[in-house]
Amino acid sequence: MLKKFNLFHSLLGIFFKNRPYDKRTVEISNESYSVRAIVLDDIKDLLSIEREVYAGELPWTKTAFLMELQAAEPHLYLLIQKDEKTIGFIGCRIFGKDAHITNVAVLTQNQGKGIGSFLIREVIQFARANNCETISLEVRISNKNAQRVYRQLGFASSTIKPAYYTENKEDALEMILHLKEV
Ligand SMILES: CC(C)(COP(=O)(O)OP(=O)(O)OC[C@H]1O[C@@H](n2cnc3c(N)ncnc32)[C@H](O)[C@@H]1OP(=O)(O)O)[C@@H](O)C(=O)NCCC(=O)NCCS
Image (cartoon, rainbow, N blue to C red; front, side, top):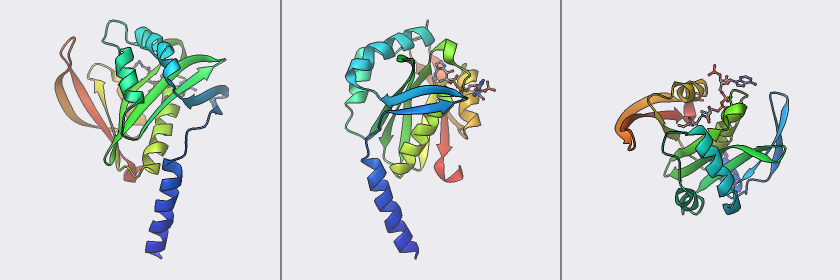
């Protein structure tokens, strides 16, 4: 029975792993948004979100996005739109049994409405479908706002990476979500 169940689970995993992320309309706190996979033409919109939310910090470059979107490892890059305007995005890349969230940002005026949490939950589903055991990310030690959102979703602090952010030598807090525990 267990073996059969495992086989069924593996087949389900293969099905979901290879399924493209179809464009969909979602409701988050009674508001309607559109979510879809990011394509290369979206990079300019992502860069402008980066400039807005990471003012004064080191935002990602066009090259960084290009490399992520064309990475050999399984990855998921999603954007969310309101009235056809891109207001947030998330990216993750799978390394072995870990899905690493590489970037997540929501325009300031759209923050606090559950959008970031929604995007992270989509990554959680993607990680599960790819048989990952953990989801990890780094966050600035000073970014208490983002850390609170991650904690609410079940992430716990792991290690501190000293001077991880090169422009101001700020430490990063690594946070990990163990998928078997949620
Ligand atoms: C971190 C970030 C991605 C979170 O996205 P977000 O959309 O603001 O997150 P959420 O709305 O899901 O959660 C934020 C808060 O809003 C609350 N919230 C959720 N739904 C809500 C709603 N419908 N109305 C009001 N508040 C809501 C959450 O409970 C959470 O509450 P808290 O302040 O008590 O922790 C976003 O703040 C951001 O882009 N920050 C700048 C860039 C950044 O720091 N990125 C992370 C780098 S590691």
